[in-house]
Image (cartoon, rainbow over all chains, first blue to last red; front, side, top):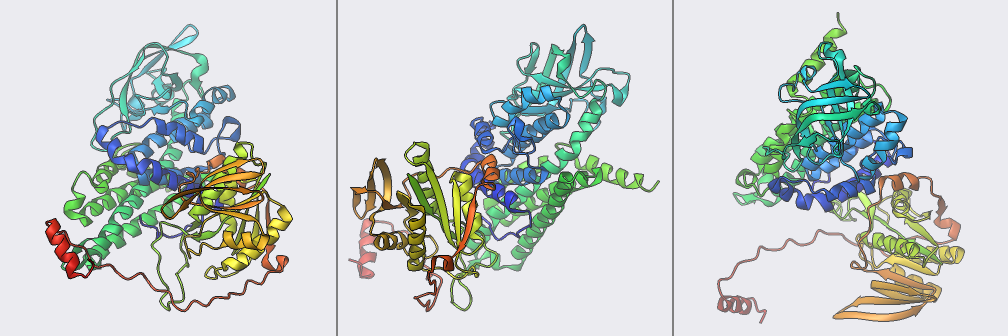
Length: 387
Length: 252
């Protein structure tokens, strides 16, 4: 464990939240992180524990069982979960931000009252489904069809790469209600896994983030009542985009958590591992590595925390949401790469946490928007202000 | 019955402790501090007594620097009802000695009239293991130290103590001082809603002077040093070799 990190001035509440999450995650998740990776299965008992600790509804008002805190709090929580296991933090983020926070932002009072309490307590698992096999970065080209028939919609098609897909009870799903209307023809729905015609594939075998269950969702004449439209018909892209900025900021915490985990592993190793008669941490090439890792961690934290604070003030911008997740994700990959290098042959062993972290970190440059899309967004937003 | 739980703010158990260059003590500047783990067990036990209907109020008290209010907030988030902070130092490096702490606690006990004082058997920073015993002497109350099991029954407590070579079970009458050992319970994690609720719970702030206790140190720290580094061990091939090595080292 590496405890000499800088103290950011985040306030007593956030510090207490970090302490609690840190202890719980180190006690309860870290010891099973290797097994979660190896067996590629999420320990579902964690959902209830997270619910009891109040981690699943950080941004949700108290009336629905939430903690009524903000995005900074959520970032800190996800960072500390990721520090113990990145794959658990990914599932946690998909539930607590992608699903729960989208319901909080866009749900009607009736929808919130119906779905949020169970999700916040951990009795229900949440997911959000945007991507399809043929619609990744180009999300608006999705094909999942929602046809209006009498008093309901009928959904047909598939969704791909859906985090928590095999386990989720409540899913937010985007579908085409008007295939000819482009971005104005998409509608968001709240799907329950018990709806007839809804099924999922077995969960995928992945390079990293193993145990964060990912699957294909299959819709065969799934009938969805009007009351399960999230937002308005045809306004799905607005729902989608409104959530994406907060999603990017929140998931940035996985990047900072991965970097913190790397230092947790590498620092004691450099102090203990001896070569040429001394700890390898005495060598300047090794000191250079940890200097770069530490700088990457704290510069990412500084940016991510500030953007999260801007979210809490209602001042987030798209370029900063995209830029902070771009930066934290790419730095996480670099730091994980150097963590394996610093630990040499030991780091290359599958039993060492850094080898798992290295595989997990790659997803950060792909999932929830690729680095390429994030760069494009930042550049486009910046140029838009010049012309 | 009211339970009073004294809690101490100490260097976090995960932190690699560093001795100050001048040998005057341990470096606490910018170091993570937490509640003494034994005190956390005491807080947990007190809350369990309340949950079991055997106590009706849990009051946490901390004596030290102003920042100890964070430690008290932790106790409140775990489930204590209210807290008392006694500011007795303004420098984090100034440790209040057990006798001064016990004298202040004796005054707090006079005011609060608890049926039980539940405290950690010792603090992990200086390992004095004295405050509970001194408080018992000052108050003339019974004491049950190193508790690994506590059973409150009316106006008496049956306490299992972890003593050298085994377990000892004693019965003490209340009011009493119980100091707790590591195996008594596993403290809970404070949930996020409870952390937020803790902010609204009452926290009274007092000073050592309010209780008329002089906290001037009676001990002088002559020197603080890092533990000596241990030489690496060796792996022996057989029992004969082991015996030979032990004889060589003069151990048998």
